[in-house]
Image (cartoon, rainbow over all chains, first blue to last red; front, side, top):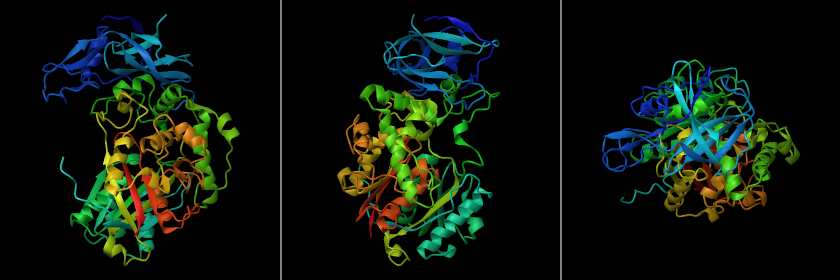
Length: 140
Length: 395
């Protein structure tokens, strides 16, 4: 599913994009897609992503686009700054994806007012060099 | 799976040793480790000449070669390392037991040394702002770009979820900090020995990563702890009354996830830790249950870490940790006095190796918050990624 890009001047702590097991996640994000890794042989979701399948033992797996909608699972508002790249306050959110049994992390500005189960949708935060990280925002 | 051979009561902790706990030790981790090891040997009535094995965790900066050389060990025939710092101490004792019962060593030093305040501070988070994060199997690229960079933030997510799912009150977390502080106030060796703490101070403390506040966080400590593990027969001839390893266990639980800590957030229920599966193995190996535990040293990097473990070890049902804690159970005379030297929260943060020492003191009857007649002493190590635990009994 293609989603909205959000061009940002700085993307703090940019991800490694060429890892054998996880690189496809960020390659998909550059295309505006939220993608997870699945076993090509038995269909098992492999999240966090890795090539080999724990269910059937296969080593062929593929990236499939998944719906960019989710619900809030938990959050914390960080008020004590420990890392120079992340001015406080900001809110780290855990998101349960809709329609698929997987969870991802996001970051919202300030002290976000959230509730468990609240709907959120994906957004693609893109740095000037093209590096892109899926992030989440509260559904309007 | 075939049944494991039993190690029940076949090995003992014969000696314990520690340095002072401070904010600035003024010496290297190697010096701290060597001093704690020598203190443990002296306590046991043994000498360096008796030692043929060492075990540490893989965060320790003091290598097996360094400690062997610093102590002047003639020939090390066994060395081993367990997982990361907090999950390590009970597993480290377990590895010493394994080495002894497999004939690879007779007397094993288990140590943890760190300059946790004056040296590298864990709470600052690892990533360099200019470097890309992730790769190499750590999976940080799924967490660090969102500002999830410290263990306190990780445990705050668990606390928030527990509170919203089960109605757990902040007062329950504060009670854990207060129980640890009360014990530290009776322990002259504790970093917080002279510092009183009240519920009002906990509630008003500055927020760090909500719902967690200042006193939900453990201390940062320079110091070292060590124990001597040997066979039960040999321990019977040592200087101290032997404290037997009734059982020791490690567990990852299902779908452990890769990496060290943050990937555990991908597990279906983040309020359940691998302590739930380690408890099953531990109590089964011991032939004991949670109701027979007289006193417990529960790993406390954060207050919420304790609350989750109380449920996972079966001291109360899942979701009832708040009510159990607020009943006063964790205080002296309560159903389960915990962290009787002050724990990581108020004695010192020696990554839970200090918990092993206090578990031994309770069986010896020498704690500054002694539980009268304690016969079964539980020690736990940190939950993520896997965890470990230890049950100690009288020899």
